[in-house]
Image (cartoon, rainbow, N blue to C red; front, side):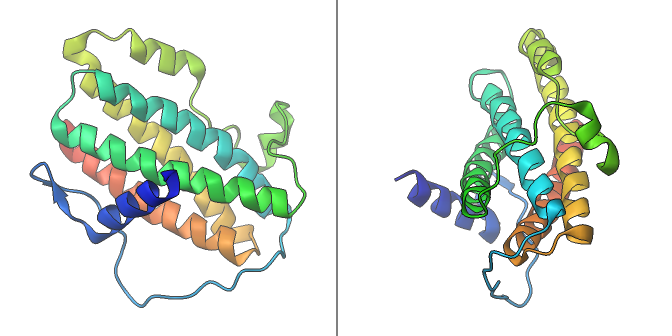
Length: 192
């Protein structure tokens, strides 16, 4: 049922359907390509997935905050769409890591991230601080933190696009790059 819901919401997001009077960011249109699935991978593919899974989970924690906080309906709708998309992405990433017999995490050693621009995660302290933000200031703080979070996803996707070899992971990185870039532009518009 969760996958059906995710697929339906993903189709709505990709179709750019207007919900609540606002258009969600759609994926770029163009020729549909079929990604040939393989189990070929390199260390960049593995690191991309190992970094992305916790990053996506943090993003899920972040967007869920919009459910119960005072934000515009457009912001709630975007947060819900992000939640559905990222749940589906995490499922795929975990499956690939399992298929490749790779651990879900590379570990917590900061040196592990030195070769690819550092740790791209949103800190638990930032999320905790957001949770205590006064109601009148929450939406702006939420959008700013989510923009930074999605920017980090774009940076990780760039690394995979440039150095990965697995077609599925590279296709996921391209979708993440395109969707998060669009979401950032949309959220910047909400801040104006």
